[in-house]
Length: 351
Image (cartoon, rainbow, N blue to C red; front, side, top):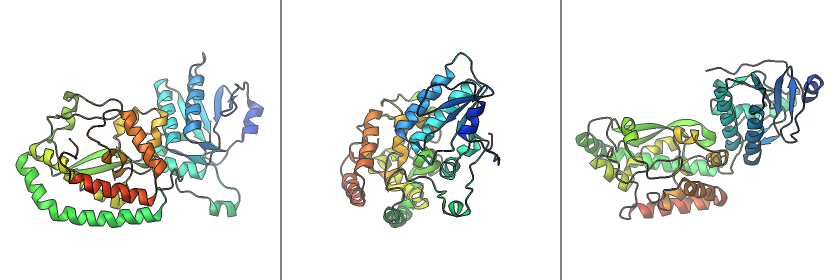
C-alpha cells in the first residue's frame, strides 16, 4: 500500500491554467492539462449527484485516445464528501489501477482528509499535497471531524441510547453466555464467536461479532451455496452450513447478542441500516453507497419488514433510504419496540 505523503507547496487552479495545453468542456468538473497530465478540479461538495457526475467525467477521460500515465484530483475547493463521494473515489481509483494509471490527490482540505483517514483510504491513495489553513484563527476553528452525512450521526441523544441499550444488552448476553456457549460447542466443533469484516459509516471497515451459527469452515464452503437473493447481498433459506443450534439461534436472533459490543464501541447503533460485507460494497454502484451515510444497526427497517423474505437488493436499498428519510429519536424507539414484538413471533428471525 502507498501511504499518503504531505507536501508544503500547492498550486491554485489559476496557476495550473497558465500552464495548460488543453481545457475540455466540463463546467462542474473542469479539467486542465499541465505537462500532459490531466488535473480534475473537484466541486465544493462531493455527494450523490456530484459523485455520479464525477464518475462519468472520469470515465470519459479514461476513454480518450491518449491514456495518461497520471491523473491528478485537486480538492482545493472541496469541504464536504459523504459516502457516495467515497464510493466514486474508490471506483475511480480501481479504474485507474486497471489501466495502470497513477491517481494523485492534491490540496486535500481537513474535512475531506478526516474522511480519508477514518476510512483508511489515506493508506491506499497517493496524497501529494494537503491544504493548509494560512490564517491561525481559521486553522484553529477548522472542523477535522468526518462530515455530518445524516442528522443521526452526531446525535448525542441517540448515542446515549446506544450506550445504555448496549450495556443492558451485554448484561443479558453475559447471563445467556454459558448455556449458549455449551450448546454451540456440543453441537459442532469450532469457536463460540464468529467475526466477520463489515462496512459501517462512510464505508469504514470493522469486525462484527455473532454467536457462531454455522460450521467452522462456513466461509470456505460459501461458493457451494446458491444465492437466492438478487443484487449485492447473500441469502439462502436452506443453507447446509447452518448447524442445528445455529437454526435456533437465528430464529430467535440470539446469535446477534454479541453485536451489543459493536454498539458500545460506536461501530454500530441499536437502530440503523443493514451492515454490508466488504465484498458486497465492492459491487456497489454509486447511488447504493448512500446507505452508508448512517451507522449500521442491530435492527432497522429491513429487520422489522420481513428480513427473511426480502430477496431483492433494491428493496433493501429502499428500506435503508426510508429509514434515513424518516429518522427521528421517536422513530428509533418505535423500531426498537417493533423488533422486540417481532422476536416473540414464530419464525420471525433470520434463516
